[in-house]
Picture (cartoon, rainbow, N blue to C red):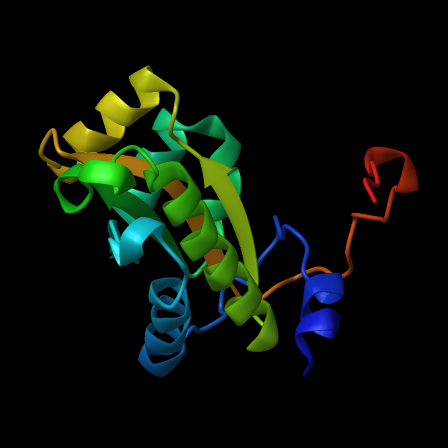
Length: 171
């Protein structure tokens, strides 16, 4: 499938087949795609936590109520930024870097026929603190977002569209 097709196919999936299976091989392919994202000065500040434990997924929903789709998703991927991996001119660019990694994960998952939903954590400080506690993360690691991943129980299809009025041309 071409990137153009994947971009147009992908959408946030909120309903998953409970019996759906995401294989180890698919998870590794998805995470590799995330790690192939660009980052400031190639600092690669991301770290990933794959959560398949149902109790832990339920705990995420309690902290971040916009993650209710984790109740039926096969797993969640917590995307984190290790601040110690950025310094000098790359310092502070982890939101862009983790955002690029997250988008690669979403697109790779769609190419594999899996559904995803990107749920933000950072910059909501109270959520960052609660996720740090839940996953015993040190202060230098910032939980950026959680991505629900699973076999979709709804149709793919982009909700976005091209808007000419949002473009300014400078020749």
